[in-house]
Image (tube, rainbow, N blue to C red; front, side, top):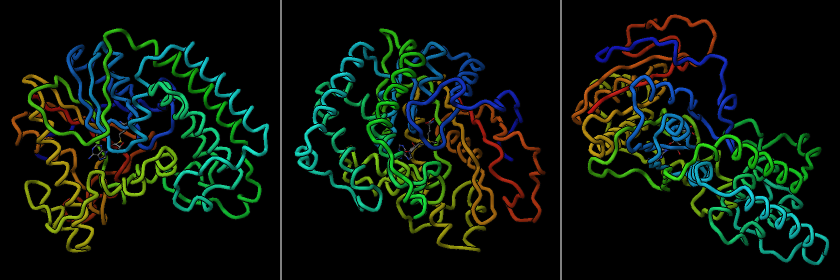
Length: 409
Ligand SMILES: C[S@@+](CC[C@H](N)C(=O)[O-])C[C@H]1O[C@@H](n2cnc3c(N)ncnc32)[C@H](O)[C@@H]1O
């Protein structure tokens, strides 16, 4: 190991879930525990400055930073659903305004459905395979909700209502709800599936209001400015004092399918390229060259010996990560810290040292490696991580740990 790894149990947070301290407003895959970010910012005594999260997802790094006194932040994500969730969480709205809009919406929906002639007059949105994923009743009722939500003029308030709407889309579709990828329920389950769209929506809306009011709103003060951009991060010059992020572990197609998880919600909210999002995320664009630089070269060669196509897919991810790190490094101020929480995934039985790669790339971009902590992901007893074969990176166990890589400019 070029960059030493220190096992640090403080960051395990065993038995703690995201929901235990920071209930999310909407489900999202592979969220980072805000407790980890808080502890890290405390350990490195970071209490002010401008924060960047180039892969902000549902915004847990912002929750961490707010807790530590940081109020100016910028986030980036290519997935529109991630941008929706994190911007709603950290945009200040008055609860009275939300409640008034809720009552108006409820009244408008119930007035509308009273007249049967109304039911089929709204044009349905363009959805791929709509009837495969929704019953006709569900489609029509979601469409009614959508119609009235989009009549809310003030964009920030409308977005607030789109969060429970998106959860309702998912819950009332034929997707198996506890999976991130889009899988359809079994036929026998569909026969008994008759969700009450309006009931689900208004219950979720009340939950979102309660969580927002109790957990997020109290942390937003007049100095808070959190800007969430629907884009990949592009470098700027020396703007940020701290970078706190949990990047994807690999390309979305073979690791966590953020795009697929979000497809139905994104389509319902008018994203025409919803089905393409996974290919737009890191590692989603094909490359023709095996990544052959630095400490990752041998690992990729070993994968190529077993499966050349997989090796190219892996190479595409690291090419993108390298480029992103160089843009992030350029955008940091001197003395700033970059904190990346990442997993070392396994491909073809070979565990890829993404933590080492991150430290290496930051060092190539004028930062120095401060520390890498290893944290356990489960409380199971940990089998040996030593290689059972002599191949670089071969290991018996993989995603039981995550790595926290800290570098300084
Ligand atoms: C591990 S998740 C972040 C989770 C986040 N920390 C949270 O708690 O919700 C990684 C995120 O990176 C986003 N992503 C992947 N490639 C990206 C890119 N090139 N630019 C911006 N965001 C990207 C994905 O959409 C996903 O939301």
